Amino acid sequence: APTLAPFTKVICRICNARLHPEVREKAYQLPCPDCHEPVDVPALKDVPQEPLRKREPRKIGSYKKDEAIVRPKLQTSYLEVQAEIRREVIEPPPRWTFLSGVFTFPCRPGVLQRWGLLSLGFTVLSLLIVLLIMLIGGGSSFGVVGAAFLGLPTIWIMLWSLSYAAACCLPVVTDTAAGMDRIANWPDPLWNEWMAQLLYLGYVGCEALTIGYGVSAIAHLFGLPVWATWTATTFLLYPIFQLSSLEANSFLIPVPRPILRSLVSFWWGWLMFYALSGMLISACVGLAVIGRMWSPMLIALGLGPMVAATLLIVARLLGRLAWRIVAAAQAEGRRLQTTQMLETASKPKATDAG
Image 1 (tube, one colour):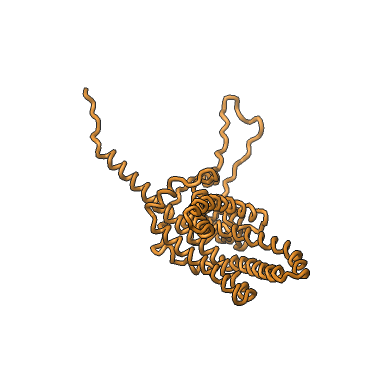
Image 2 (cartoon, one colour):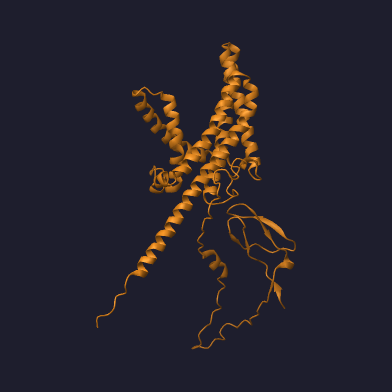
């Protein structure tokens, strides 16, 4: 009698992972082990039936001496599926790469809750910093004692906010660079993993700061302001070093050849990224300066969500820039492959002299 298969094959719609879950009476969902996206598993009645073939067991010792033992062929469909190699082709980026869906990115489903957590962390951090400045600036003994009590909570909230921001922004860059519109690799609620991401981004930032300091020291010899030169150089170098570390998957290669080539061949894309991200960062700095002169506590309430949105949008811009660079590299590779095939086909074939 035919029976229903206890397992079935489903495919994740985000990362195309093939799963073989157990079939139940009712349909249910299970998280994908790769991207944690919910995957629908059909009900038992919706799974096609597969007949089971019965095989009569043979008694031990019933084989003849010269008879070859025929072993049953193992089913390898699952292993073949797992061993299948797929070549993923990244789709071309949208025409308005740096504008289409970028500035509304924090309000998208799945991103809004991360933006809310980041806004809460940066808002509390801004309020604590303003309160510390006010207590220390007062010069009284009560203010110094109060600042000492607030110092440790401020450090902890700063580490939590920055580490969570690093853990959120890095998947935005990598998934966007891979041509994904939705972010699938959001961070898990593990604070130690967030700190690892923060240390990674901090190391890349230290490289940019070190070189920027050297450039500012040289510029100071020519009468240029140190802080302005240092800030501008760090701002220009950090995105290059960040994409370089992701491209080379190593800290030891500062700028690989594809990134250097893109600075020349795709200069307008880099210019758009620096212009848009510079405007966002300048708006945050300007709001902080205005709040210092007008109402620090009130501006701190609006500065937190603005800083959180700026970080997510700048990460989206950097991912779109990397997407453009990868798409251009793939197009160049296909062009070179076509040229080589044409050159090979145009060469006269060698004939045997005999």
